[in-house]
Length: 167
Image: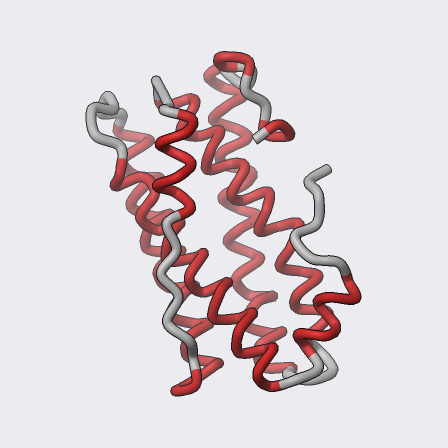
């Protein structure tokens, strides 16, 4: 189980004020936009048709998610330019597609563990944001299952000793 990003109490504090909701949703939108660029940052990776298809769908989904979140926040959205994927790639230096699928799986595990808690915290204050996050979750879960299936099919879940719980 992935460690929570924020406690329920911290989420409740953010959710209870318009400024807190704005900050949190802007950060999540930035995370989605950053995730959209992950697979485009992999020079030298062998071309695999399934991977290219996944990258195209994944990038479009993540960019759409970022835009959906920015839209519900409106003009008060805070520009957030994250580079977490740059840091992940620099640190992990994925050597093959299996390791890339593992990185994507970890990011999706984070989203599927975190977003429902954020949606629940926002529900009393901003049902529209909660509904947006709920709709994004459907795609996050689908992509998590896809990555897990790819890892299982390729029998590479333990590539270089990396496991999603340790990243």
